Amino acid sequence: MSISQLARSIPPSATLKLNEMAKMLRKKGEKVIHLGGGEPKSKAPIDAIYAASSKLNSADIKYTPTDGTVTLKKAIIRYTEENYNKLVAPENVIVSNGAKQSLSVLMQAIINPQDEVIILTPYWVSYPEMVKIAYGVPVIVTPEDGGVHPRIKEIDENVGSYTKAIIVNSPCNPSGAMFSEEFIAGIVEYCEKKKIYLIMDDIYSQLIFDGRTRISPYKYAKEDSDHSRLVVINGVSKQYAMTGFRIGWTIANPQVVEAMDNIQSQTTSCPSALLQAAAAGALTGIQSHIESLRLTLENNRNVLLQELNTLDGLRTYKPDGTFYCFPDFSAYNKDSRALSEFLLEKVLVVTVPGVEFGMEGHLRLSFCGTIKEIKEGVERIKWALDPNAPNEIFIGDRKLVRDWL
Image (tube, rainbow, N blue to C red; front, side, top):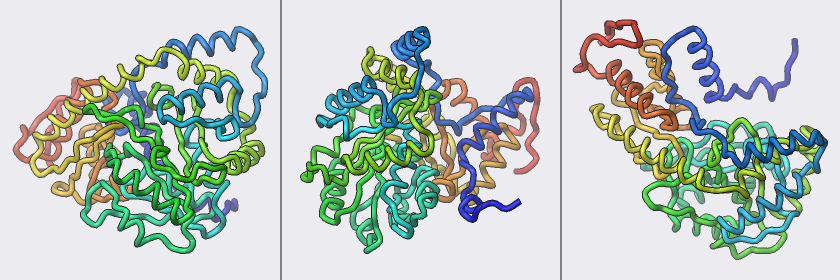
């Protein structure tokens, strides 16, 4: 059987693959602890459920406009005004089947073959592949100091005549780092000067800790016309714990939105009418759900950091937001894939190898599970790696004896 060169070049999503592996092991009765997932445990907001139920009870679930229902677009416009202090028009908004599709369709709308897109390390695993699917070239920029904060100087050194866009994800998956206001202001100014698209992936923008507040890129944008190259991506998956609803959106200039609309109309048509109703319900309903989730995640982060501090030789950046931590395990194993597989095989803990995010030696650990899962997960990791740990451990009813240290 013959498949395309493009299809052969695209690997499966590492995170989704691990999710399936964890589910399969649990079905077999294994006591797996999943520290690799990106899915909050909390339920969807009741306003989202009521809105979806009302739509379902009407039995009037038909096609919607490709770019989204009027009701949802109005809710997104209000959300943007309240959270970004930016008033946008309906023609600046397009709704997609999740923020992931929003990003993918955006790439197809703005990238020509061989156009380059700057991606900052560490990066979400799907960014480079989305660029490749659009026949573009991902250009990876890694901080010279080995840290998680980008510098405009390092970005500038990688910008050339083929550069079409820069993707900024703050707070960042996988590091949890929130970039400084100085950096956001600088990158907005830089992209306007260079006439480069600045793509702000803001999917975690409400999940910020330690009293910090989100930074609106519109605050620093001087180009406010219909030709602005500032694009903001968001959705309901993370902040409203609605991962399975698959509703995201793009805020961009009308030409970009129109191009995305054309592409989307030829691929997935419109997002689900039912799920758009749910998303509108979440956006216009009581917003205390977000703060409750944020506080839970902040507490979980603190517990995870406290537990990780008991491992000697581990270097950990304190996450400013998201629900991920990205410790450097190089002192134990510089091969993150081998380490991740080792931890799954020996102690049934799922992690994501740092190499998938562009930083070898690290593992991404999620703290969106329960406190019990976090504590036990780190306890198992420590037992597997620390030569000073006891030689035996119980996982469920099974007693494991360490024979590799």
